[in-house]
Length: 200
Picture 1 (tube, rainbow, N blue to C red):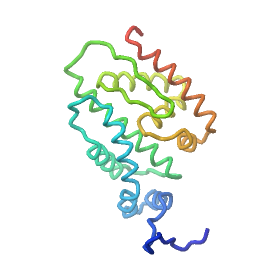
Picture 2: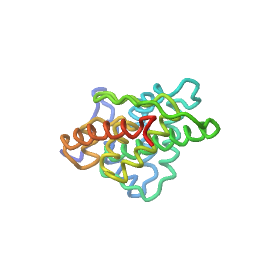
Picture 3: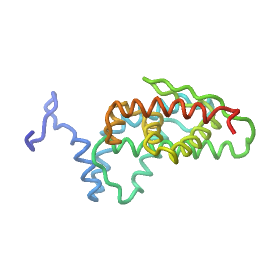
Picture 4: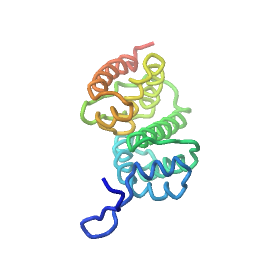
């Protein structure tokens, strides 16, 4: 492909490619992040909406607030280098996980007791837990899984918290689609067992 700027159907210049903006931002161009966010905002909001729609009722954090918090953490990030869009959304997934888990932990700090319920994982659309203690239990289980197999835990984080497809997850992890599917199937069973209320 030539280095010319492509035009949209309306004759307006197209948005710069995400990867190009990521490389510029990684190289220290702070203006690139300002250009990047409008391009990726819709996708981040879609991911955040999916996560927030499955949060427990009454959670004051909304999808827009979650995306804004991710943006603020990205602005504060230093020394971050991105290879491509999948790697960017992988970091966004990690940030969303931290924000949601930190919020669940702080809300649950005064509500101790009771075990977490089962988490329902689906191949096509990964359902998030609906209660704070389940989010915390999932995070604890993911940390335990990461000690045994970091790649499998990362695959869950990317798909569950980041909303990445199997293909995007494979790209972010640098593995085949088949490997992600195997990791995903294993992780579902492992986490379901680890999160059972009767599990010590």
